[in-house]
Image (tube, rainbow, N blue to C red; front, side, top):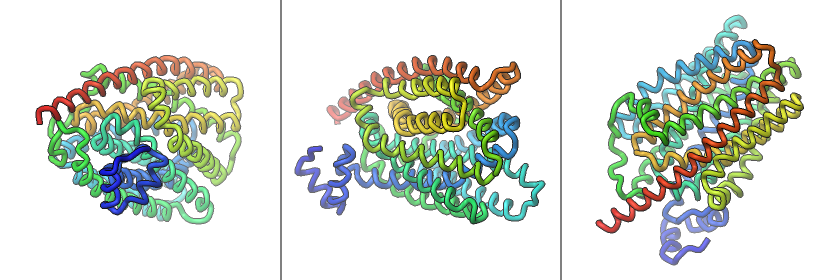
Length: 452
């Protein structure tokens, strides 16, 4: 990447010249963006490390409660999401992002520490219900903290920045996930789970530190000159995140994209639970198997994010990039319909989830760079949490209904592939619409620059 002399001097003055020259070989970053990029990277690294320390524990507890109970766990998760979105909307309305984000993260950190204490003193009979509560809460935690992260990122970088940088930022998530998975895979059989939970809570405090630095740098970047005072409270209504999601055709189609993603993911998750229950009787072996899948997924994802995401966004465009995950899903369900085995499951999960994290997720976040600022936090949070978990619920009860009709893994996989076709069309349309809205935003920015 070529850099003019002024940019080079800027990089040197900030003391980041060497770091910039190294990163410039991997990602198309501008010198003035470097500090924000590094804090973004550290921020998502700590979040995903925290979650992936806890994810295998959550998955094992979900299986321990019985496959038939998973739909009830998903319903509990949806109810918690609905309840939490109202106070979160109030925080976004009343406080600047440099305050409501740390408050949210520390709330989750305290809850994790309370779970650690409960696990320490629970008797075997209480562990089943405690495990179910933990499954629900960590499912809530995951979506909330990651959604807030990306809301801050799309509030910092614009659409064109996102196509260049979001893949590399997402690589921080992947390395964090690899770290968390490796910690749990290596220690789950040797130390109590409450020690792992305390470590996960401490990582959230590091994320708060990153938030403070990134919030200060965000205004300095000023990626959208027509938006001012981004550290003031956003305002609006407490429920506007919900109502806005269905007033705009663009946002409504993002809702549909998320629903189809969640339903197909849930189908695969239930198939995973069935296959794992049949093949692994020991809880430790189940946890290690889940952690091994996570580790393989994140190694593959890292390679995609570092070397393919930005190139695919530039060459193929957002529309084709968003259509890739539905296509992978169609092929994956076809594979499970023909070969419903543990080995096939692992391949499908690794390919699909790495395609999601490496390509679909960064491009899905680009969709939000062209919506109003209030929607980046409120509506995005509603879609990423409530809509996603509603999709889980639809998928869970649909799976139960299909099995009640006598359908097996192969037949349900065919139904999932059919949903993938609808999802593919939806994703392609969204990408095309985002391109048009991004052009309008660039024109608005040029107009502001001309009149300044």
